[in-house]
Length: 152
Image 1 (cartoon, helix red, strand yellow):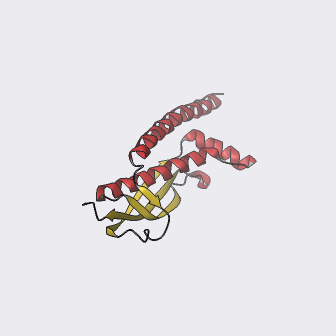
Image 2 (cartoon, rainbow, N blue to C red):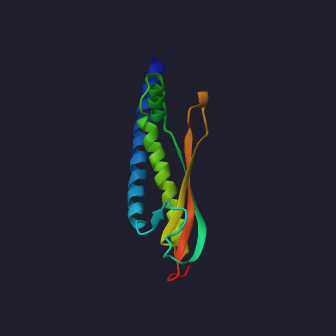
Image 3 (cartoon, rainbow, N blue to C red):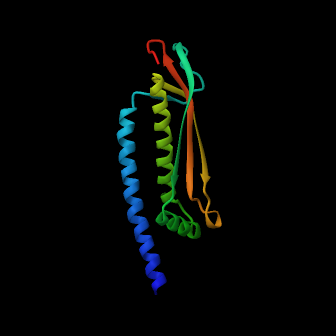
């Protein structure tokens, strides 16, 4: 009986604190996305032909986000029954958006107004018991383009 109480308590604490941390992180992401919206991201391999950049430089941003206890539990249930693992989808969404924001921050520090040839790499790290995901890393990188009118 005590084991069940401990399990339910850990589950409730994992849900509560995990939800609080996730909500706070999403608020921070929304605020910074507004601040960086003037930096264009272009998936094309090369800058537009009419643009003659003064300088180009590789920029990157990396984010590692860990899985809370509740999400790990829910994902384990999904592995039994199948279907979408929404708890991991939000984890990857936060990591991806955070990595892109960090890349944009680096581009802004150079005076760039666009980043082209954007690439994203994702890896699961810190695997726990039975190869359960403990954290994910997303690396966003691209080529920052500083126009001739700016000085870095």
